[in-house]
Image (cartoon, rainbow, N blue to C red; front, top):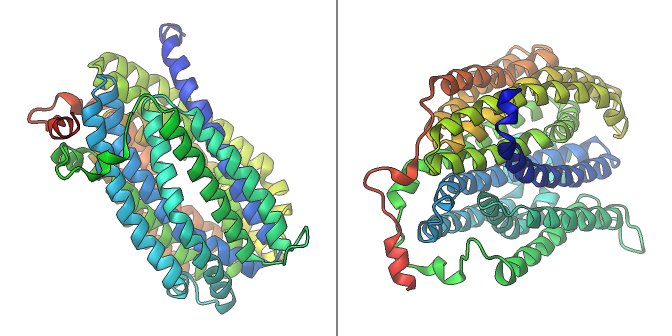
Length: 465
């Protein structure tokens, strides 16, 4: 109780950041749920095709999240010193990495749709529907990449409301246009999965316009301008490589691993693919506040470390650890409570329903560990600058245990679905155990703003002044 009383300011700051992020995540969940429920009404091949195409989309979005989150670690610490020159250097590197990512993923989605889909499944009907969705979705990567990276940067300086405004606009636009274009309402042609993709594209363009207007007219903290993108010599490259790139690699390797797990599930049949899609939507719902707290924790802990308040950062970590346990218990209960109503929304076969019941029950156990792992790794350790350890944890257990054992148990030995799913998700428990040990050790605090030999951003400062 004393720990809570003497850290009331911490809870106020955490809540001020976490709640808007959680609401944004909740609204994003609403968009995903609307897509899957509406497309799911058309049949399993449509639901499975869109679900597998979205696995590739997830690789892109997680990569962007990694690029922006790695930059966020640095910006949060520099903001505590109001060092805008260094912040501008970090953001320039970030936007250039985002641009390269957009080009690569857009090309694959638009021009190689069938090839990408065939990697996930051999079901020709699923490939056809997924590829039709893919070719249009490829055009959303530019606006989605810029908006995601920009809103994450704004979080680092405490500006979180704009992301909520963007998400509300996206939800309203996407759901309405889904209703019109998927089923052919209000005189429009019934376009199926293509309609869902067009609705998403329109929503992404709208959110890009909103963010650009806000950034140009109202943003007063980051003060980043278009001219910063074209600076020839950017400072902080070595520090960015050391501090932020582990986060980028972390998220990219994790996303590729998640895609490989989707390949494993996809090749076990469209019924399991449809069931897993439902499970993922429910998982997003129950973890919206968990990931809101995780992202907010990275900012709050990063600010404390950047300000040299190391003991305060350790105390924050202790509070966040107990909070993650509480949130994990609540999330597990909500999963079990909503399991039956969620499955009943979808027009799927009895076999797919049985799979969904099994894996969602297992997920109720997994989500408890996921709560602790997310807040520890994405929040405490990443905010403290311990990005290389987070990379090790996220990559090691997924690629050494989840992926190989998932393929062996699911495709080679053909074990029961519930066992295969439990094996695939076992990495969450392992990450929880080792991240707890790391936090207790106290070795995770790394103040990057005072490290020896920093490139302080004078190159950018000189170019702009």
